[in-house]
Length: 233
Image (cartoon, rainbow, N blue to C red; front, side, top):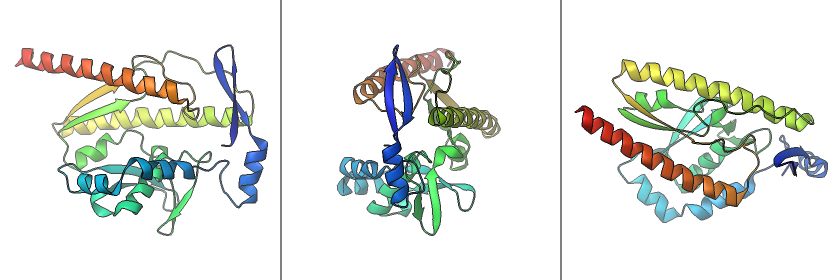
């Protein structure tokens, strides 16, 4: 972990864990932190047996990655890979560089697909989707101002958050345009409250509650949309 977390007046602030960063660089790492524990967790969570069931099931499971060497976004389907490779693609798709691992695979350097495509609605429609459920992990309208940057790390995370937010909004606009031209329907699910102002701060209990409240909120909205559709028909 390349940073420290301090809470003051209910707000989490991050600082540089200088010793950890220096150790990473000494070991030859190109990033401030490493996320190999995440790959281990993915392999513990998805068993080879579950992978085979998913691979031979009716749904196509795809993860998005950013190929930094070729300067392009790539989409990796479960149907094209075996267990170990696909677990690595899932891991790569989560690696928020330069704070998490930069992975070299198939002769190229890869990172989180969100660096190029946060909400790949366009790709889903290109692959034949006629109804898209898009889960957006923030409120529909902005309800907060970020705290002032306290150090270089804080500034860097704020800059990345700003850029990713712009990418996400652009993806949504393009997705709506493509959907209108392909007779596709997009159901957007936003969060009812602001979850966090820093997505690099992981708190298990709080994130578990987000999952539960988000599922209930989306379920309620889905039922309302279904009822509305029935009334319109």
